[in-house]
Length: 209
Image 1: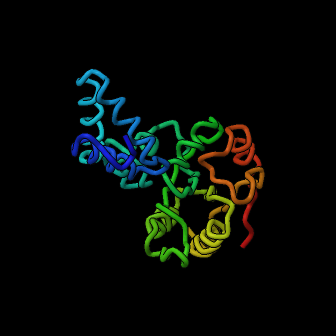
Image 2: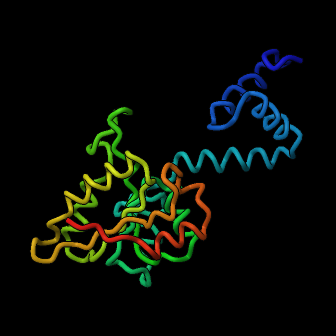
């Protein structure tokens, strides 16, 4: 059977939808769909239900914009986290990457991307204004920029640092730092090993106004 010839329209549709996932070609999609067919129906139904509930019921934390089951995520509401330090990241995957190091005990702020004029992403498309509000509140003492060390990441660091440079007051501006360049330029945090990422957090560099 050729990859573009299916004995069932239902199979063809399932493969077509599965192949829309990142990194999944039609051959891989076909193997996954056939695997689901061979499994007990309960397993396939459980997978489908979990995906539907994720899509319909997942929330985003009103404070940090991380994925959450409640309006305020467990990290933001945890009494033993350091609420005076915020780690700014691009996406949810980066939160998971930093948490896996066990080196950071503060809070997060998920921007939802980085400034990239080539891709049509400007400051207004990101969660920057809410970060400014959090710092302006006066309880935040340090902001750590943990964006990917790319031109877009550095541009975003610079833009936000200018926004925060006189907050919460000109007399006592918040301390700003970036990850030490133990993370290679051009690498994604999602694929950086835990030792390198953990060292980068420990050896973060202070940004000077």
